[in-house]
Picture 1 (tube, rainbow, N blue to C red):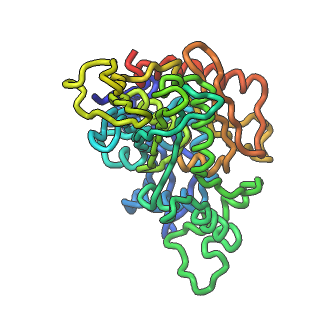
Picture 2 (cartoon, rainbow, N blue to C red):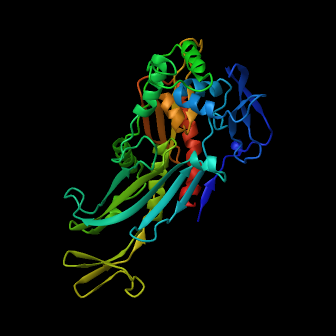
Picture 3 (cartoon, one colour):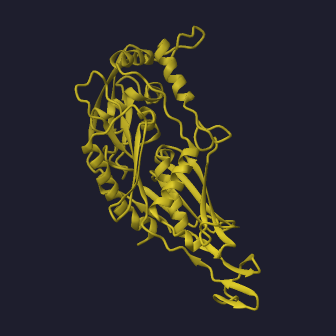
Amino acid sequence: RIFTLHHSSRIYRPSILCHSKMATKINGKPTSAVASRNAKDSQGEYSVSIHDDNSSGQEWILDAYSALEPRSYLQEFTSQNVRPDGRPFSASRPITILPSIFTRNSYGSAMVSLGGGSNASSQSCCTRVIAACTLLVGHPSPSTPNEGDVDVTLSASPLSGPRFDIMGRESGEITAGNYGMAKDGGANGGNANQQPLPGNLSNIISRTHNNNNTNSTTPSPTDTKEIESWIRRTLRSSRYIDPTELGIEHGVSAWRIRISIHILNHEGNVWDAALLCVCAALRDLRLPMVEIDRGVVKIVKDEGSSGGDGQKGKVQRKQGRSLTLGPLPVPLTIAILPTNESEKSNTNVLLVDPTHLEEDVAAGNTVTVVCNTNEEIVEFHKKGSGSRLSVEQVAAVACMGFGRAKELEKLVLGR
């Protein structure tokens, strides 16, 4: 079963051209950058390219521009009320949930993808996370003799993204180093031995630095330990699962669900993808049948031949079952872009479901609200000290969170 959610607001039909402010010269010839919407793609994504009457295939210069000057590159689009991937500020990427991806060595699993499409470029711009549930038998706490617990671990590898090391830690030094090198010494970073950039890209870098009066900030790396703690806290406060259902024998044994999450591809907003994947894996979880013999718990693999709950001699049997789930905690992460000092308006730009580039420009200034279909705010988590939200913006974030909760409940739980 593959469930995919598409917003109708993201299906663009007409062909629209959005001209950006960026203009330079390549090899002494005038060249303009144009962000054009591709009507052939059902996602309606914008494709940014260099249009030159005398040469073609200059798309590489915008790739270099976005890598060296991510803030200025993003402002070329936000100034036109659009994002590099063609979405409005308040639109999220399509969500795909695939349950039961592991048939062995796990009792429940799921995979969640944010973004993605039929073409290769859409697949490379998608955030994909997998989660699998394994079970351990442990001793419950004396204060809660009938309750089990849930443990969450999040891991990554160099295959998750170019910034992750072999230990699964992400660093912002790669982007920050290139960006700082271009800022301190132009396109060549003040290094005489470094080869100059091709074309006239150094003029773009110096011009955008002169026009941008804000202080640059270093991108905030993804902290896997922080996400783990946030997911555990959200599961407890949301009452999504009842811990008393994890008890096996009063005061003696209880289930401990260990949820292992792995980032397959990181293209922004891992927080939302990880929590949704955990909820989908718990929805797919089924506790196995067990036999209890004088405190020893044994998992019965063949449930069909063992009958239901009961007691045979000194052996007590408990039938396998799925968990009774509560209201689904649905997250919504919004990036808060800082404003330029030269701009008269102090209103922050809020980008729903940010990509990795947008998260880098926001420099860790994000807000994540977790809501359910009962119109309750389960968690409100704001990161970063370089931005502030007004009362109207907080109310707007809550309203968007309530709408997203109603939208995704049927997708995750199948209700």
